[in-house]
Length: 139
Image 1 (cartoon, rainbow, N blue to C red):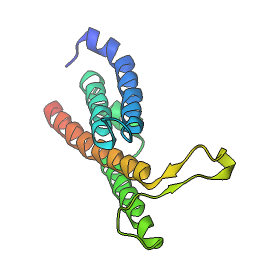
Image 2 (cartoon, rainbow, N blue to C red):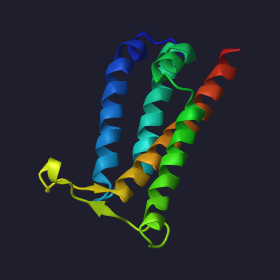
Image 3 (tube, rainbow, N blue to C red):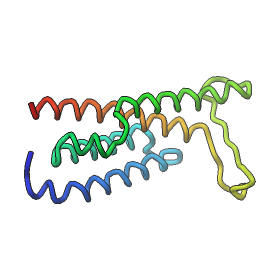
Image 4 (cartoon, rainbow, N blue to C red):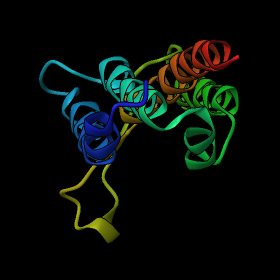
């Protein structure tokens, strides 16, 4: 699709969608949202940019291949689940850590890392499918 309006609006809309996807990802602990929905929004942003500017600019913007992003997300999700095995609890049991150097009020949790892993898996897998379909359309 080579619409002038879409080519003009797509970079701004893509940026807003990526920021919103991170918001939905981080909001998912206490309210609806999380890694899956945030990942779908981010992959939709890449697909929109691909429709307006072509697949090449999207692949350059992503730096890593989409399936590499998905693999890194899967590794992160598994490691966040395995962290509970190290302390002697069941797999995927949530752990929280409140480090003093962050003031003790800010916590780090394994569910957050699991959500980030799911986010990366969804972004990588869906972007790979969308970019693959768009490449076939260009041929």
